[in-house]
Length: 76
Image (cartoon, rainbow, N blue to C red; front, side):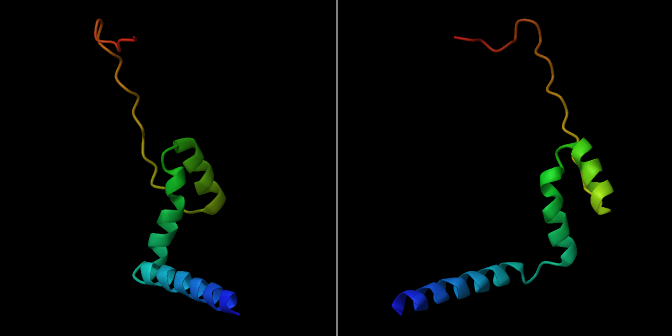
């Protein structure tokens, strides 16, 4: 009986904690957060936009600059 009461308290606590964390978030905020995993790959972002109709704010990742001659990483 004690185990059921503790499990119920745990579930209620998690529900209350999640509700409290999300109470000031709008639907737009939650939609944007759900699209963050696709923002770093422009090709995947385009496919997600086509599939869902939602705009993904993709971030263009620039290529690292090539090292100057003589300034490469030293391997030991």
